[in-house]
Every structure is written in structure tokens, then in C-alpha cells.
Image (cartoon, rainbow, N blue to C red; front, top):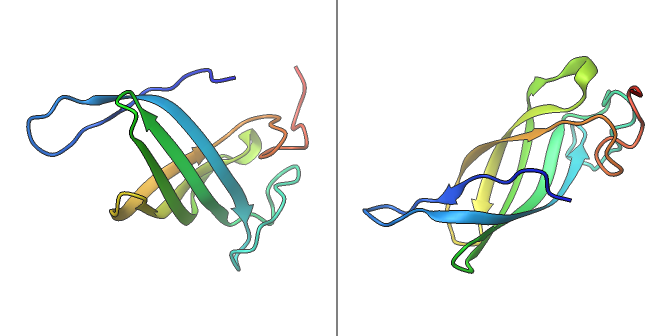
Length: 117
């Protein structure tokens, strides 16, 4: 279930922004050697993330972004954090991005509950 998606594609020039209508992700935690690793409870072996995200826009265009990155800021007791990514897209551009993965109990990214309410 999607809770919140906000954003748009803004092309160079005086074109109208194209609303973002979908976001899919296939990411995994990686260790210092770039090998996939389980987050466990506290992410002790995690150095960053690797994988792809796919953005879908109101005009039917889809852009796949692949990347790998390392921690920029860990969230400690909250779990997850911000990762500085080197990325490239299916439309041909390359650059950097910041990804944020955070949560309490997500079956894939945080499989061990950190606390209960």
C-alpha cells in the first residue's frame, strides 16, 4: 500500500512539470564489499544500499534508476538512514542522489522488529 507519493519530472526549458504517479523499488542492503547483507536488528553489517527504482509519470513515461551508495547519515535507534548514491538512468543520464530508507518493521528492509507499540 502506498502512503504518499509526491514529485514530478521537470524537463529543461519551459515545459510543464509531469506529475509522478508511481514508485517501485528493488533495493538491498550491502556490506563494505558491496555484497548483499541482511539488516538484522540494528544494521551492524550494513554499509549502504544497491539496486533500482522505477518512476512512473502521468504521461506514461517510466524511468528506471540504478545505483549504489554508502551511508551519509545513519539513524541509530530509529533504523535505516540516508545513503549517498551514484546513479544512472534508463534514459541515459548519470549523477548522484540521496536515498532514505527508514522504518520500524518492514518485511524486506527491517525484518526484525525494533520495538512494539
